[in-house]
Image (cartoon, rainbow, N blue to C red; front, side, top):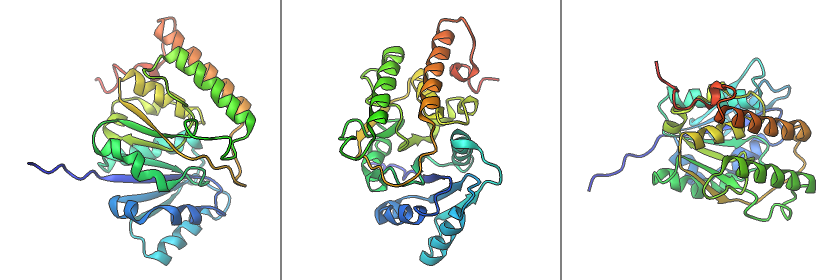
Length: 262
C-alpha cells in the first residue's frame, strides 16, 4: 500500500500588541505539534510594543529553528495580515495553514484534533467552535454570546449551509492551501469581517467545512474588535451576498467560479 505523503504544515500567529502573552502562547503549542509542522510564523502587524522582539527572544532561548518572526512595518489589518500569510503559504508550497491568535484566546493544545480531518482529506476548512461547548462558562460576555447567536442564525438562514454552522466568528482556523488557491480571498476586507467573507467564498466553491468544539477562554487580553461596527459589517456583507446572488449587483469577491480564469 502506497504511503500517504506527509503534509507540509504552517502555523501562523496573527499578532498585534501582544507582548504580554505571545511567549505564553508559544509555550502552549504541544511538542507533538511543533515536531509535526514545517514552520511556525509569527506575523506581527506593526505592533507598537515588543511583540516581535519577545517572540525572537523565545526563538533564540529555545533554539527553535522552525519559528520565524516577521514584523510588518505598516499595519495591514486583521484581514490584511491573513491575506499576507495565505500568500506566504501558497508561495512556499504548504499543504495546510493553521491560524492562531496572538492573544491566546484559542487553545493551541487542540490543534491535533482540529488537524485530523485535513490530514485525512475529509475537510478543506476546519475551525474550532466555541458555541458547541460552554462559551458562557468560559467567560464569554453575554453581549458577545447573544451577538454571536444572532449573527450566526442570520448567516445560516441566508447562506443555507447543510448542516447549519454553530458559528462563523471563531478565529481558530485551519485551511487546506489548495482550497485557498481556489477562492479570491485577496478581494476581501482587511478588517475583522474577513473571517465571514472567506467562509462564504468557501461555501460558494463547495468546499467541505468541518467544525469541532473547543473550550472558550476570556482573560485580561485586550480585544481590538469594535463589536457594533463588526456586527453591522456582517449584516452589510450578507446584503452584498444577496445582491450578488440575485444578479442585482456584481461583487468580484463572490465571483468564485471565474477565479483564476484568464
